[in-house]
Length: 87
View (cartoon, rainbow, N blue to C red):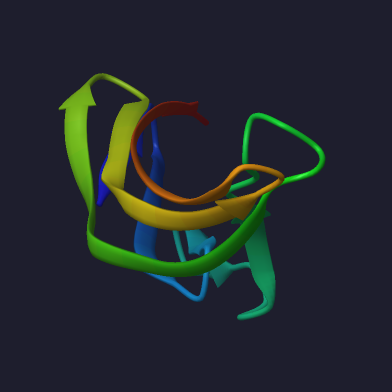
């Protein structure tokens, strides 16, 4: 969860995506908004992600992190990711 002014963001990671909902007063956005966590190289394919989390960092900034098992041209490898989200 993060706060930016009078907006509150509820976020959770699932299936290589960060799902979020914005709450502003009594108004909310739909439940289908997400940000995709993409691998760095376009040839990579993410096979699984664990443990993943979204943490409030400061003001309207959130951090998401986890470990992805990635299949690339040279085989499988584990990749730690850390992404800053700003709303």
